[in-house]
Image (spheres, rainbow, N blue to C red):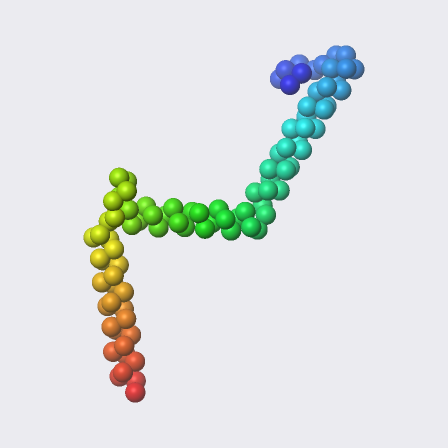
Length: 92
């Protein structure tokens, strides 16, 4: 910026330049905030975060599949489905 922190410009030209620089900075900040708060952008970031989290849960840092975790989740799903089917049959 034309005016350094703590110093005020003294000439009208320097003041005008400082005002223009601050306006440009403020406009850029408002544009960035507007882009960040768009519903589509929020949904995109949320989906990307979910994909990233799922990848870290199912893959090791070296990129290999964590079969022990997938097997545990698969077993849990089988147990839940089995319990559901048993309870459903008892109600009949």
